[in-house]
Length: 509
Image (tube, rainbow, N blue to C red):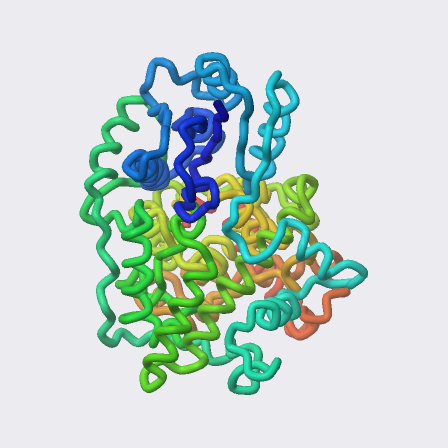
C-alpha cells in the first residue's frame, strides 16, 4: 500500500492523484499542534484550515478514496508530521510514501528529512496549482540587476495569453494601475458573500478545548471564509457578478465603515488550493467579456495583475531567496511591535480600525496591510521578525510563501530592495487621501509637532532622517530627501524629539 500525505494547504480536488480510485492508496491528513503552535494564529485561521481539511477529507471519502484523518484531539495523534507518518507507515505496512511539494520552506525541509529516514521509497509530486514552477522566476531574472514585477507580469501575460491581442496587451497598455487608486466616497456597495459556517462552528469549541493559544475573535455570523471548493467557486462568481465592476477603481481605497469594499475575499481559498489561479482568472475574464458595458478593462486588468502577476511573482521570489531571505534586516531595525497590535487599543484611528478589522475578521486588504499596519511598524523601526510573526498569525490567508516576501520585502524593506523599489512609508497625508480614517481621529493629520500632531508625520520625517545614509542611493527617494533638506533644523529637532517619544512608548498614542 502507498500512503499519500495531504497538507492543510493542498486541498486541490482536481489533482491528478484523485482521477482514479486505487484501493492500494491511503490518503492521510493531520491536524497538528506542530502547525497551530509555531506561531500564534488567529482563531478564524485555525478554524478555517481545520474546517476546510475536514470538508475535503469527507469529499474524498464520498468519492470512494481511502482516508485516514487525525483530528487535533485524536489520542493517536502525535501532533508531529514525522512521528505520525512513521506510525502510519508501520501500522499500514506501507510499501511507499508520497507527498506533494510543500509551499513553505520549513515543511519542504521537514519532508525531505522524513523521506531520507523512512525505510520505504518516497515519491514527490507537484501540487498542480501554480502557473509557474518554483524556479521559473529565478530563471527569468537570471543575469538581470533588478527583479521588477512588471516585466515578469508581461512575460506571464504573453505565456498564458491573458488579455492579449496579437502578442500585444488588450487596450494598448500592460498596466492600468493609475486608474486603481481612487478613494471610495461611501456610495452603495454589495454585501460580502456569506459563507456557510456550520463546520467552523463545530470546530471552534474543539480548538478551545485543546488549549491552542490563538488571537482574535470568532463569530459564526461573521465568518467569511469558504471551506469547500463548491462554496469557493460560488464566492468567486459572486465577486465577478457584483464586485468586479468596481474592484480596480477602488482596490487601494480604505473606509471607516467597510472592511471588504470590492475585494473578492478568495485569497484563503486560493492559498489552500480549493480553487486554482487559472480558473479564477478565466472566470473573471469571462465575466468581463460578458459585461463590458459595466466592467471596464482597468477593472479586470487590476484583478488579473494581482493573481497572474503579483501572486506568482511573490511565490517565485520566495523560492529564489530562501532560506536566507527570512533573516534579512537591511535597515537594521530592532524595535518592538506595540502591544496594541494585539488589542487595537490606540488613539490613532487608522490603526485602531485596521487592527480591529484584523482581529475581528482575520482579514485586511492589501493597502491596510501595507500602508497602515506595515507602514507604522516600519516607521517605528520594528524588527522584521516581530512584524513577520504578527502578519503570519493574524491573517487567515497567510502562509509563509506569500506572507514573508510581502511583509519583509514589500512592507518592511528589510531585503534592501530585492522586491520593492523603495520603502513604502508615508505620512498621514496618504492615509487621508485614500480613506476617511482621519475624519474620526483625535490627531491632526496636518501637524508634524505638538501633542495633537499625527504620529505618522513625525515618525515619517524622522525615518527619512535616520535612514538617509542607507537610502541615499535610491533614486526614487530623491524628492523626499529634497523635502527633508528644506525642513529647518530647529523644526527637525522638534520632529525627531516627538518621534523618539512615540518610538519609546508607542502604546501611549
